[in-house]
Length: 296
Image (tube, rainbow, N blue to C red; front, side, top):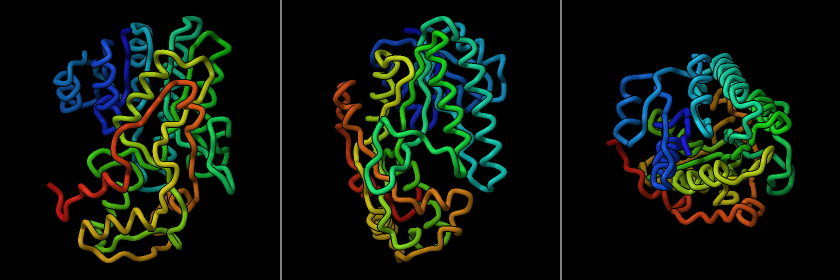
């Protein structure tokens, strides 16, 4: 299959790109910068230059492909305005990709977060949030899934709060970066809230499975660890970095403070049963043991 991928050189995207190539697919990667283009080419992908805001380029990439995987996002959480801009940019990009595939029955796989289910682990059947700082992403993903009625084999891989590789990535990675900057490994509130997690290489396998076989309009959970207490996550970070561990007010985490403070465990039981997905790589707590006191 000829696959067009956005975000193919990030922590998640680079593993998805490698997984696709190892499975025999041909990959064209969107690349905004010379550095990203060089990384994609070195990995074995063809390169299409452009960014998420270049809608004609996105349409061309989708039209020339047998399937599309969308992973790119600004990841700018510096302010509510920056986050809102990134969400709007992604929404327009997804709309362009989807329009190019209408009536083709080709797959379009996008990413979202796992939802919140009060008092229990969220399942694949739970709806995405319609309120909060990232609700705009939920609306964009819902529109993608609705394209199933217009001849697009659309699906969504819901990613947990932390997608990690070698101790880096996701919300745990943000906590690590903040700890390095402030000298304190902080957790929001009392730290009992739980975050699900998955190794990036395991997530990559699920993206490939969704591309190859997911029915139209379906959502899947890339969850290996159903829910680690944030205090436990930060305890490992603090020990590995040699820093004190302490509770920090949620507002200190900026625009995504409310998300950081939420208890959001998630299950992947249906994903494992129906797609045959089996995570095999290290858990988050084990992977964080690879953190070094100073960055390489």
